[in-house]
Length: 272
Image (cartoon, rainbow, N blue to C red):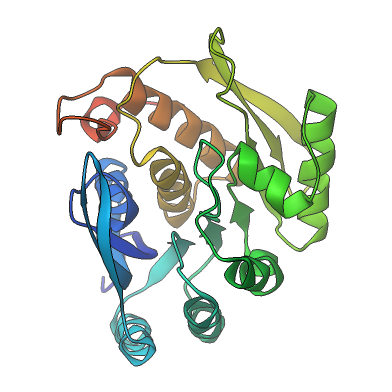
């Protein structure tokens, strides 16, 4: 039957070193047995030492990418990654609203895991106002939770309060990722708030490694892949947490400095 195989879409930049962005998303889709399509928003030149150049795609080209996919494929779930400016965010919002691409997972890519801001304030405000309300799932890291919720988080109660604030902005399901700042931590805790009102904490062992490029991309991509297969929301989130932990816990030696997570380590595992 035409288009019977589950298909997912990544709307993101292309990272030349393959560790993050669109490449990490496509690795994850492949590992979870979902066909991956892509809308390229930018091209990034970089390696394990850092990013050295980037070129945004013209918005009319992005419009055409969306149109061509909508004309032929049956995208069952989509996700966003790094969206560099307000014009690009609004282009993605316009096209996603016009297409039938299923639930949307928004990885807000505002702050690094170390707390450095990636987006200009004007673009952040556009993302907060126009994109986040469309999110079926929102997956901010610790510093992004603080930034979006406009509050300091110093306790579990603070994190739970912040997640509810994010849900009040329109995002239906929230995965508020915990801090990695404690040098003595042995677990990583994320708070999950579902559209149903159910909430819970997810914990996995903390791995001391510099092979963590693409962690956030892979988490949101795994959720997207599972939703494309029809996996219920709660289980999709649980699978994604386990998938990423497995990918971090079995590092591969690629590059000299900050390397990628290992998607092979989690391939074909039963995360039921």
